[in-house]
Image (cartoon, rainbow, N blue to C red; front, top):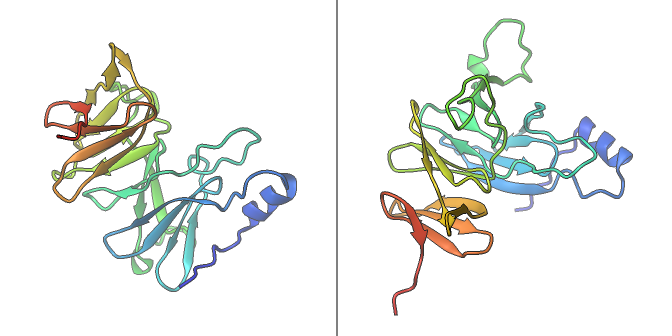
Length: 209
């Protein structure tokens, strides 16, 4: 089955303004939620949901990148233990069912509520945790974030824990984090291959001969 990405006004305006730029509709990640809706993260235009019949877009300024410079895009999507969604930005999103959309003047297209997430990784609520490349949920439903070159950060719903990932006491560059079927967490790095969480720290993965 081929699914055609729906066109939206800001996407067509962006293409008209930047005809030689990369396709803003390009899909960076795909995620299936607990209700079997499929979510897509795009290069520039935020994220959209497909429920099997129709599409819903989230085009808030924390997930879109409609500027003239490089775009990080929505590279990771996850649903947390409370049913809220994270799109590698400073916010988390509560998604409403159509029948549960608050009757407070919200039109039907506003199918979500956006809330500041956890502040900065260092515990300050006055600063924002702006972007990260990848996120995973472990067997305890804790969230693990990979920003790029500051190690890995775990959020258990209350506190934030930092796990350095270093070579010669220097943080290395990370691309993604993944939980396998046994609950083990894996890191993909820029230059140092795969790393594996041993329960206390991340260590380089070595194939046993």
